[in-house]
Image (cartoon, rainbow, N blue to C red; front, side, top):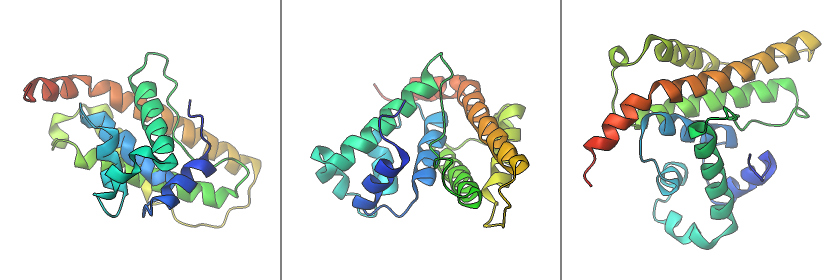
Length: 188
């Protein structure tokens, strides 16, 4: 688990002048880790930061420490056998409509990260993966809608987050053969 909370990660991203939200940044990381056998923390920083040269300066900073830890724990959670992956989303104390927007941003980030990986045609992906990618595309379209904050809406949000957690783990696990084939094709 991440030792840093959502606010600390947000502060780190803001300190690095990243143009993306915490949710979108984490989604990007997860999408890329699903398809790329060697997606480093530095590669992730280059995707997030407006000036790619600045990621080298960040290596000694608190910003880098926070983001490196997020990278490490996310990588370990996805690759681990414990199935303890969790998307980084705002705490439940924020209004539901803000959490829904963050969920949409996370999904957009995931699709972006998935897309920056090695090109994979949808025909090459397992049907389950294509189905989840379609679902993430739908979630990414969520907009700032008025919510009542009812128990039913909260329950639906909780179920959607749980679906996302399990679906991303499924994508990661289903694409082990793809990452293995890519890794063996890399120069040694």
